Figure 1 (cartoon, rainbow, N blue to C red):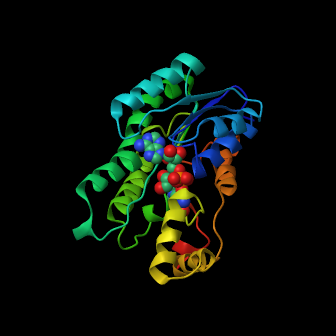
Figure 2 (spheres, rainbow, N blue to C red):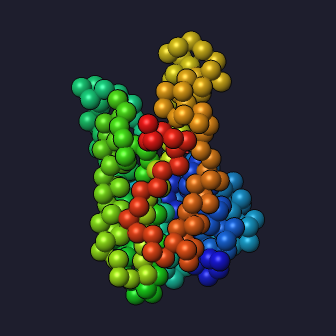
Length: 256
Ligand code: NAD
């Protein structure tokens, strides 16, 4: 379905981004990976699906590096047809204890990076009159939790940015939507499971149950594969007129 298209997925060396990259590649899209840590493993995994795979190591907190990544995409792949703004970090602390430097980093990576990548991707999408911008927000783009001020502010912000991007392109073939996962068992959440296990003096498995029990009625983690399938839907012809939605996959978290 996506043969000949190129998808740039930020923060795709791990977790949800890698799951979305795999799902888009399975539909035939060429993939540009981005993120830190091991690159060879994810690269091989996606290449095994028979598509062209590139990588750019832009630090998404740095606008000049984001611009360099977009230049790389244009030079090596022609243009970005599908932009998935996924890179993100978390920091957990009460507002009065929140390190100022962590606030700035969370806002830069989880929110401002999406503005930069979007503004740089839009002209070529508009010219082609086809494009998909998918912002990986969170249930925290819709509701809040204590001790996550920067994350909740950034995720509410990216839901707003999603709506504006959708509206500004509403008469074109370029759509923009957000995905709002509940708990997904990735390294980002494993850290919170570890913290809970340490705080309560319980096992890893018990800590997972406590974490899910606090917020997620299904008592199940959403998977990167499920989120990848939603991204594929946004890219499908059935998604042509889906614009500006914030679609939660959260086991009932925000239904409460
Ligand atoms: P993860 O830690 O597994 O992956 C994060 C990815 O972002 C990695 O590839 C990492 O290298 C990359 N990254 C981090 N900082 C970066 C930077 N400065 N520049 C470039 N890349 C950077 O986390 P994840 O859980 O897969 O999170 C992905 C997205 O999903 C985030 O935006 C997160 O907020 C969101 N999310 C996660 C959950 C969850 O439960 N895991 C729930 C809702 C939303």
